[in-house]
Image 1 (cartoon, rainbow, N blue to C red):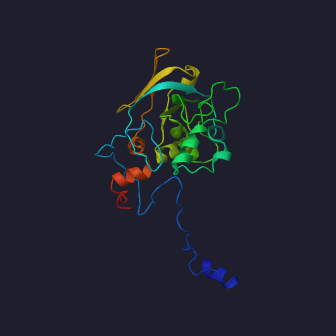
Image 2: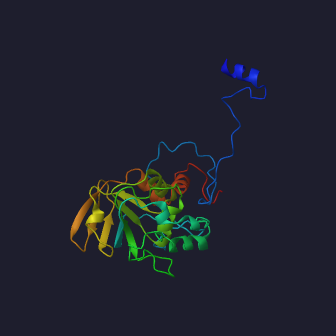
Image 3: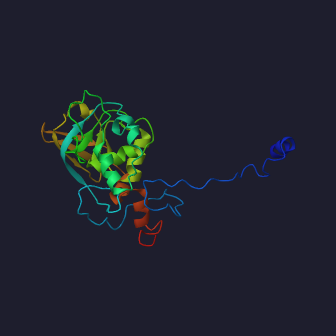
Length: 255
């Protein structure tokens, strides 16, 4: 009735208002393969076969990338505060870099956290380098707020970070971390950023139930919330790598 009334006013309106012409699906430059026939991820289950081991300690999105399962991370901490936004993680001027290009992926890593204010005396990545010496980033509340740019978790992974431990996350950053498979976004139950310092030696252990962060410098141990169903997706190297391994879409060889 409403559609007929509208057509009487404007006869150029389509006959079926409920079925407008659909635009072609967006294909992200972060993915090397088209999404193909994915219909639902509501029933994601852990992969039966673990990902093949990689010779590289870093998960990358370059053509040579190979997903790797990582359950324990050991190294130096880089500590930041609350409300670290995506402009601080990777400024907008570097968003022209395409992560699927291996050279540009490396450049992204060199610019990770370069937008932090001058009050951060230690650089996450030293000038002229592409890799960081810090394996674990520790933050406060609302880590990754700001824009929805996927470059944010990608640049951290490209730089060599393996996990972020924060009190809370912006939802889109958490989701992008899982979708790209670059880093593990882990929730702490307390403000670990107030009890750790940049340069502390730490280990993150991902367990079946609660995970833990062990600060070997201070001797303290902190419980982390379980990563849950996102874990197998990150282990596989991201949502599309997971889907290929689970048989939801054609494998890379078939594509």
